[in-house]
Length: 334
Image 1 (cartoon, rainbow, N blue to C red):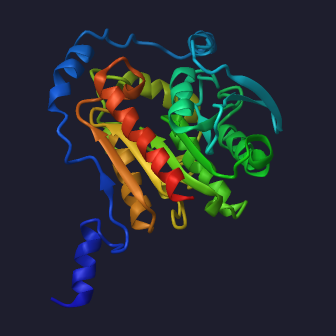
Image 2: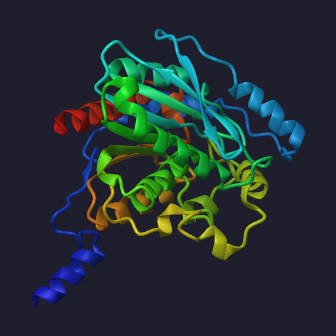
């Protein structure tokens, strides 16, 4: 077989960049956790049939806007943005080895800088990172992609001020769900507009939606899909992105799966195999790696959207893997 044929075959099998090997947890045996996972999802009530209205969106926001009990006491800061001030909620441990820019999820419709207080507090203390969570303006009042614009401004501010405020220029960016979507898009802004990709140590992208035109697993979601079911997903997509054409939805500025992904930092991808966005994670990790970037793919059997925020043993395992990866990336930079 000729070398060109071998290279083609390796590319077809997902090994086109011979210098980058995927790290993953696929050899781990999580079977002992399946009973608890199945029992948990079995008793969850079905999603109600909801039409998202301005009133119901405001009700959902109230559920996410309640600060949670934490060990560290968060501080607040505001920076200027195109639609008013952008709030920043900061968890800062006594020792700071790096700064983690956190972008919350919520379909770009709800969620806030305090939505993930509990996990951000643990992240800060475990990894010795200052966690800066962004309070970006939400759709539909501020139509997408205003959220990416504000996250990008926060990233620019952090790159310019992290040394003075936190004593370090080591920065990571992360988020879950729509927060992962916005984190990936923000990283593209850092690379393309700020020419500062080398200043970001790594990304943490958890169960993100990277293709707004819908990957197969998104399209195949049913009303029985745990975490995010078909009806609820359809409503989120209608309200947040329904005004855009297919071509616009597939543009790199909207869906980072379609972007040029060369020259990006190491990235930790996390998702459950029962998540409606499992294809988004698998496709994005593959393209990220094929572009020559380091990746870690962390998949967890039968887990649904947002599982690592639940009171499950598998959530502890997933979060430990995430935290260990963050610490490793920081240590490797020294």
